[in-house]
Amino acid sequence: MSRIDLHLHTTHSDGSLSPAEVLRLAHKANVTALAITDHDIVSGIPEAIATGAELGIEIIPGVEISSFDGNSELHILGYCIDWQDPELIRRFASLRKSRHTRNPQIIERLRSLGLDVTYEEVRALAGTDAVGRPHIARLLMDKKYVTSAKDAFDRYLAEGRPAYVARELPQPSDAIAWIRAAGGVAVLAHPTWAKVTGEGLNTLLTTLKAEGLGGIEVHYSTHTKRQTTEYLDLAKRLNMLVTGGSDFHGITKPDIEVGTGRGDLKVPERLLEPLKKAALLV
Ligand code: AMP
Ligand code: ZN
Ligand code: FE
Ligand code: FE
Image (tube, rainbow, N blue to C red; front, side):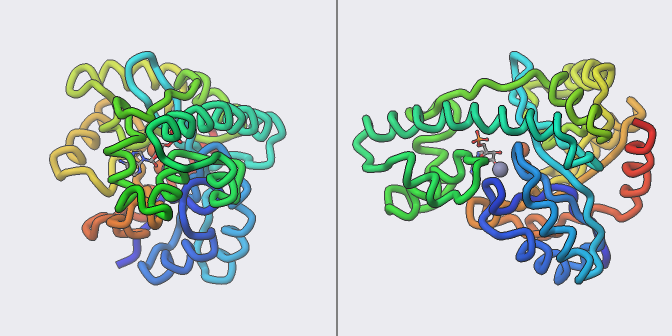
């Protein structure tokens, strides 16, 4: 019954529930350890640790950094980081700044498409400095321009859609180096985002491993059995850590639950010790 969940978002980035609310759902789902992995921010971690102590849930300090390798947007998860590291905190502030450069450009595009939205409204709704497209999606939902976050991405916000604006992203090697410099382990999130598969993915992971990547998010809410097996085989072949998580966001991904994903996710507890051990060796 017990499980872990190493990929969760809260109101400190683009999730719709607070860390305490996420932990209460985790407790109900028999989650014994979890990582809050907000985008470019660690401010949710203290509340998670406090609530975790009350509920008996172990908290792994985490983060998720978006990067671009020239071909694919690759998300790098950082685990067991020293989340109070001043250099890391400076990096995150600078990543959030690049969000505030891009987001108003998205708003301008939406306005030129005739939608009555302002960035001030998005910022007020977000209530955090780590503002992402899901917040813009929520404003569009609130204003009834779209019926769901998926509808907002499909019609306006996804790559190739009329309000899409790319953000300046670090190289994966930078994101990996920042995480390791703060004592953490770097893991490739949702490997389906890589625009390569098979031998191409093997080559990509070999490069990322040489740059310091420690693991692969093998278990993930949307993975098919076949994908899970493929990534598990790759992790074995490359001698990399296996991790997993739901990527829970609350309302912007309404089909994803804490701990269980779309119902059949079960990240085994035994994956935690190797991860923590790897962090001690960084
Ligand atoms: P940003 O970091 O602001 O570029 O926003 C990207 C985030 O939006 C991703 O990390 C996902 O959490 C979320 N996202 C991307 N595509 C979708 C989608 N189709 N539906 C809901 N959320 C999405
Ligand atoms: Zn997100
Ligand atoms: Fe991601
Ligand atoms: Fe995520």
